[in-house]
Length: 106
Image (tube, helix red, strand yellow):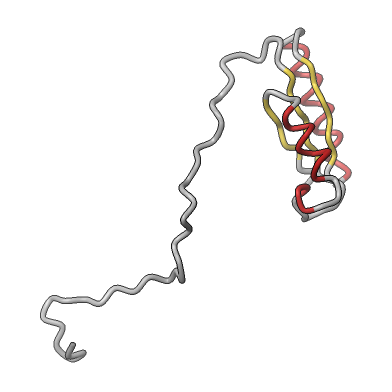
């Protein structure tokens, strides 16, 4: 192709080396109600995260008295829990709850 005269043609390059063969997966369906549900409260290890979760828990239980909660705290900052020695414990916890609320103490 003559770079000085494009004649309406363009060469298009992709910035990606390869396309991920795993198809996109949507998020889990939303809960229609929180009545009689078990909500996981996941905290990162920052100090304010536990305070935020405690406040959220109080407000949820006021609004939905039949709701249960389960707490889980991340063991290390800035590392995915599934990349730590707690992976199995975390995966078990996730299976025991209907939904999770993440508390970040920043």
